Length: 180
Image (cartoon, rainbow, N blue to C red):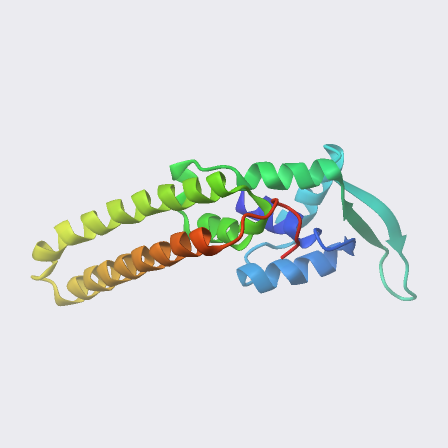
């Protein structure tokens, strides 16, 4: 899901050829999505009518490049993906963070649900690490990992509190009216 969201997001601001999309995605994910993920996804989106090929760019001495545009159906698909609040999905940092980054495209109740589910995941992970701490004390390097994870989870809970506070302070705009 993450790769679909990031690729579709790459087309929100206008048509791009595959290399431009790949460069955008690399800035977001550090280069995790490669050509073997990008181009099959673009073909799949095109087959479903979520993306359309609008032209081919031809440059001397270079291969032809297709330019893709997000359709209304593709925008609806992106919004649908952002609405997924399945805990198995939101326990993954990248899935959670990509949704927060696109909060301006979803309604307030979806934002609240995403934060609520993520909080439950983090609280559960924190409880597990706190249970491991006493036994990890016998293994100094293992204890370092456990203590780091405890601190990281507590820090994320603080951040979730800040996000929830920001939601309360933010005017309730119509979702999807701005492009991040």
